[in-house]
Length: 73
Picture 1: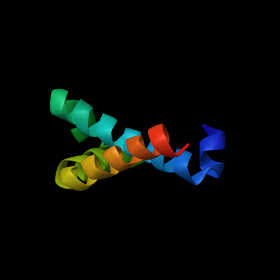
Picture 2: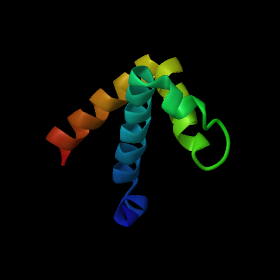
Picture 3: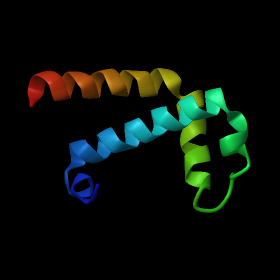
């Protein structure tokens, strides 16, 4: 995880995966993330909200990142 901080593409991949995972978890069990809207665990709730509200943009970024990982590297 620490090496992902120093590589920009890896950092973007980790952030995209976090957003997608939080949105998926909130779709399955909303009570897990809704009870922690503040504090350090509030980051996961915020990521889920980004994934829900900006889903076309997040999906486009995921496809772009997958293309970059598969064909550019």
